[in-house]
Image (cartoon, rainbow, N blue to C red; front, side, top):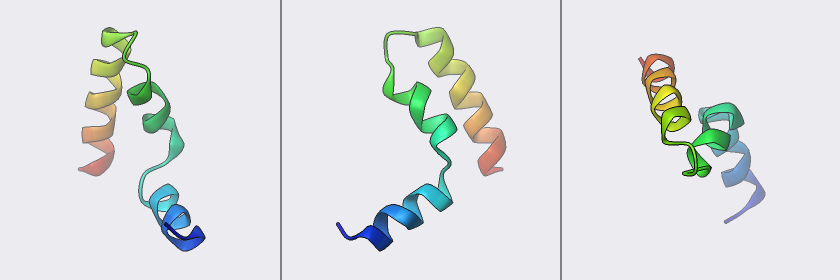
Length: 42
């Protein structure tokens, strides 16, 4: 786990979709984030 690995991860996936995904308290938000992430990946 080097700094480069972290930098690459952030560049590949922005922290926006990662933040809500980490919060399982809101399943509704998670679903919305999942849909948005899918669109971003596509």
